[in-house]
Image 1 (cartoon, one colour):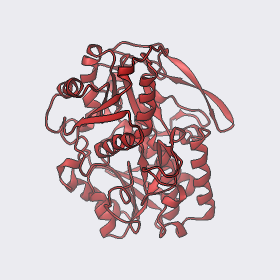
Image 2: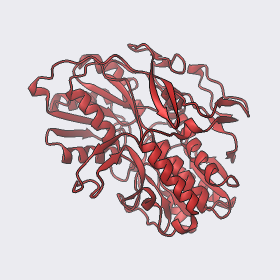
Image 3: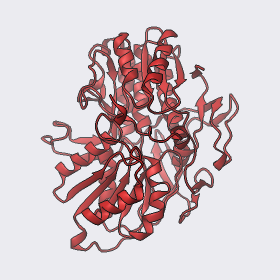
Length: 458
């Protein structure tokens, strides 16, 4: 792999971007909205989770529609990709999502500009060029620094264009600039069940890029799965500091193995942690996409399980809002396993699958329990296999979530976010009780602490 696989390598402030708040938007409070842009009043959404019905704060606006002229029924999505497509499970997977939609819909097309941040290009210029030349009516930014502050500055110039921006931790928005992410953490909880079951040393490790809300959310869900499968297992976390630093990623991964870790995963961008696992015959847990089936980077001899983020499902929902003529779409889209695209069995994307959830276990082009490596599966007790199957089905039905089920207790480790006046909760603080669904704003922008029980290796 060369430098092209970095999502955020271009920024010397990569860790700050993911960990802090970038741009003008400041959180007003959990469940509230954000200043610095046009704002909307907070409201609530009722969700059924388990046996309970819970009311969750969310950030939406009133839906207003207009009649869609026939000329606008052709949708062109512009991808302003901060990184490169080749070798990337982030920008590359989002490009693949657009390719898939083009196969499904004759009225859909897409254009793109890659390496925008890495090349030092102005995202505003990129977006304007794609709109002017290709008549794009949806514009997607793959990293938060594309949309913040860029899309804020130009959204009003193009009132009939939807701008979509990935969330690192800043949730600011505008009427036609919406913020988006996928609930990858749901699949990562299931990966934790697998990892907790297959470890023989009871030691599992993560090589983590920067200390960031996104990474605290990921490791929290993974750890909750580990704990549910194997209360005796310990999760060790060691930071690389950047999203892309191959030598440091290798060093950190080897240091984790020196502790006795026999299951390794990573929240970084290079393939070095995978190489370390492969060369040392340790189990590896993949992230973001099917690194075996879609990329061929390894085999199920090493990759015990992975997950695939189907950005096309989120894009599909937003595109249909646009086609419906919605002028004031929801400003926050955080889609999970219960959102899907329905497809015929002979579909070109996942033949035989009639539903494509927004995120799911996927390894070597197989899904669900079948995504578990044939060599890893015999190591997993039937009760855990049944639990994986049960929890996956419940999340696909929207009836369960790991962050609803479990309390979130701070270890005392974390990051302060001064822009939000957000301190790190002291060790032992129950920040979120069990059987209570946290708001989307909390999960995306305010989960700034490591869970108690996770061991930080310094």
